[in-house]
Length: 213
View 1 (cartoon, rainbow, N blue to C red):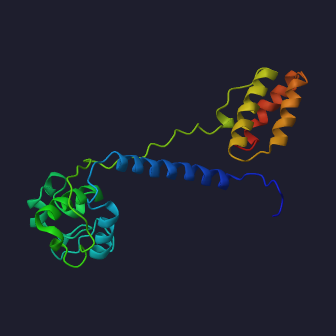
View 2: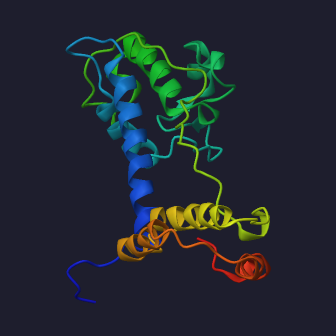
View 3: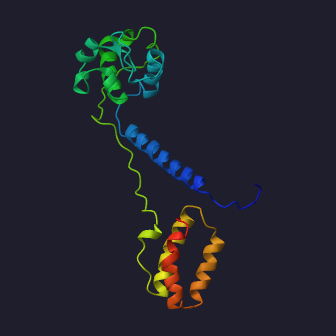
């Protein structure tokens, strides 16, 4: 399709909303990072991600039964000995943020040698705190979809106009109607034409056959 002004589709609208939600998640995570404290030489999240990638393939919930759990492969004694059980019984049951908090404590007491192969790129340790529960992305509430079957019986031309307005507005938001069609409908309303009782009755009898926006 090569038209210069391709009509938006429902898929396009969905993708746009997904981008907005994803942006909110990224901004939310960024705000949490900016709100944290640390030192110039502190181990960064990127460094811990590299350690986890090396130790466990980046799987923060891994537990293969080999005696080491979580993305940074804590032994149970190390996890408990550095306060990990305040977050979860074992590392694989804790969030990534909580595992990093405990890892900073291990780094401070044992140094990079706690991860002799994968921890060589770590900077200095720093005290961190972690939320007991991961932050949740708050998505905006979407309006309820228009449903012809639940629309009240129209008793006047004005009632018909209101119901069609609601349906057309939502159809336009969903990318199912072109601006030109909406413009024609607006012109029809401005003409002042009044429907007859028979026409209103016919609308009520057949409106449930109209497409849902």
